[in-house]
Length: 120
Image (cartoon, rainbow, N blue to C red; front, side):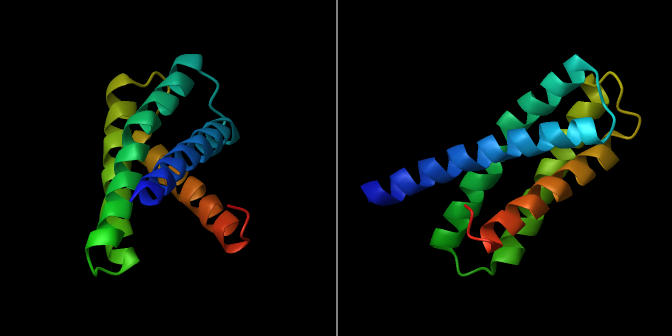
């Protein structure tokens, strides 16, 4: 049981770190420069990422659902939450939900590639 908890905590930390790096990188790739908006992106991901990762791991451990069935609603949750925060509190997000979708697709895609290459 302790090993499961250690693995879960490691996964949560690694996922959050990679997400913060990738989505802040995407922020700059998308041409954004507002420091308050960058801080918002980081804070919103600190809220949404651990929730998504924790629910993903718990769902995989305690249900027989296919991983895709688990991932899609969790990613939609993250996109909706993040888009809402960008719309409500962002300074220069002209299309906050499009930014949220794009940042999450970018982050998830790069993470998937890193897993396929056995880097993480």
